[in-house]
Image (cartoon, rainbow, N blue to C red; front, side, top):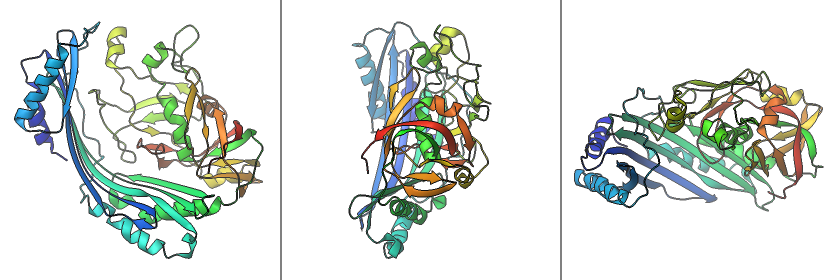
Amino acid sequence: MMTRNECEALLAIAVQSSDVDEVFATLNATDSCSRSIAGRLLLPPHRMRNTEITVTVRKGRRYAMASGNVYDETSVRDLVARAGRHAQFMPEAPEIIPFPGTVDSAESPMYREMDISRGVDGFERALETFLVEPSFDGMRVFGSATSASSSLALASSGGLFLYQPSSLANAHLRCFSDDGMSTGFSERYAVNPADLDLREVLESSARGCGQWRNPSDIKPGRITTVFEPRALADLLRPLLQQFSRRAIEQDQSFLRRLDGTSFLGTKLFHESVNFRSDPFDARVPSMPFTSEGQSVHAEDWVSNGVIAQLVTDRYDARKSASAEVAPPTNLIMDAAAPVSDIVASTEYGLLVRGFANLNILDPKNCLLSGSTRDGVFLIENGKITKPVKNLVLRETPVYLLKEILAMGHAELTSTTGSYFPMLLPSIRVKDVMFTQLSGLV
């Protein structure tokens, strides 16, 4: 990664060009180390360093972009010149929106100093002891552990300069039974590598694989369902992307009324639902600015079920003479009860731990469809009685948030396969629609 002073000096070369009308420059430097496992074989560490500079220029009403990974002074000047030459052949923009100027933004607490290589050393030690345990007999594990340090800096010819260092350790592991008919998955993230318990990730994936052996058939239909935090994260991510004035204007959001206005200020969800975001919350630190140079502030998006805020980008803010509101870079949904209490109070239903994929069938009501995965279990009389086969969900999270029956304790989680930090509870919802068995292992 690069220090603040190094980034500032390098980007100053780019934005001080006199050959174009405006310049916006981004510098992203990453140093990472990862180790992968395939079956029972741990592969050697893989170290990677990458630095990329991207410049966007405006000449008159024409915009163009160029990228490179050589960052001496001459190369940066050549990059700006190349973008300027490309701009001559671009169509004219209908309107000029100036690049952002000076904004206030502090650094988020999302960086811990660490030795990149040592960040994954614990994977080998955890694996060596775990593979000899009887609980792992008849299983194979696939996945990786990675630690990385990064720095992101933005600058513009209008006086903008933003800098954020970050560190992230993550492990995602999937266990399969030797016959391939049972699977378990575990994924964890931590800003501080010391907080990532690789042994616990291994045990969790193996435990899930063992619990889901010989799943039973179940009749699809409307079934009361408990969603664990990671499953809820996958459901909420597409919903959150529709909290946007632009999406509403383009009729791509459930927040658009029939007359074209928004549901801002309207109660749409259960009164217990509160969504907020704060990039400086030490539990889920996240980026304090966007890649376009918007400062990200603490926001309430849903308050007691009422839609409280919408994303407003620079273009929409200029058009409507309203304030800019950056999209959230984390999500917090506080609650108090442990998931065991939710299960214990469920007479009959399902416990869903995750999804393989969720596709948006209809953005106008955020209708999603996708298969469950990584553990589906039947709940009877307050107890988990047996695993059941994966089902295809066909539902909108708008309905789920209206029909919440109970919420559990908030836990640190993220969407499957990508890092978007969230503090989310487990939730129980009545009459969730499952259309068919998916046949997925």
